[in-house]
Length: 82
Image (tube, rainbow, N blue to C red; front, side, top):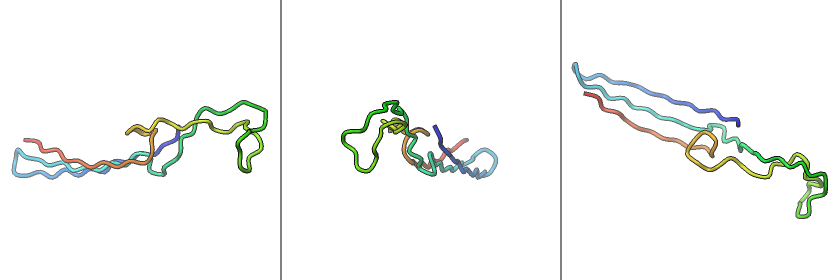
C-alpha cells in the first residue's frame, strides 16, 4: 500500500512545570486509492464501459478505517502536561 502521512507539532512551555503540545496529522495526504485484489481472469468483463478485459484490474480497495490505508483523513489535538 502506498501512503504519505505527515505530523506537525509544537510544544509551548509555561513557567517551570506546565507545557502545552499542539499537533496536527494528515493521513494518506495524496489520497491514493490503495487498490487491491487484482483480477487474473483472461475473459471479457460483462458489465464494462470502455474496458474490454478484466486482467490486472483492481477488484477492491483498502478498508475504510482511520489509518494510513483508508481515504485522506486529518486530526488535530493538544496535550497538557504538568
